[in-house]
Image 1 (cartoon, rainbow, N blue to C red):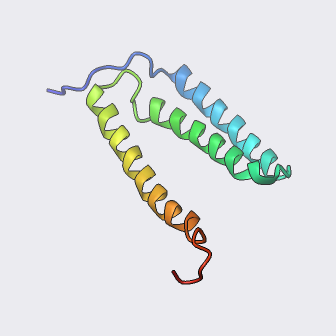
Image 2 (image 1 turned 180 degrees about the vertical axis):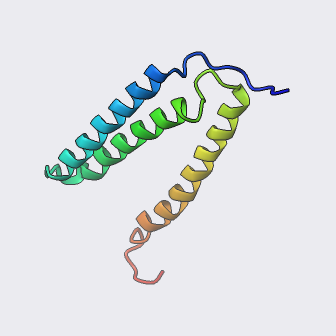
Length: 103
């Protein structure tokens, strides 16, 4: 017997709507690549990518309406990813604080 719960929100209509949103966000990503936003280029690209990732996770990975344990696993993965990015970035940004090369 399967112990998986049925997710009534994951219908064909939901899949089509997510596909349409992903196509719109892909077009938005391409359009944003041709616009010079200065220092905000990376922030805009990451915001669009994060939105697309949340859509995929919620619908195709059935996190919406799923078990709270799944939320715990996803949250711990995101937390680990943030740590792997934050510590090298912290090291990189703090290299010239002393003003002495190599120290």
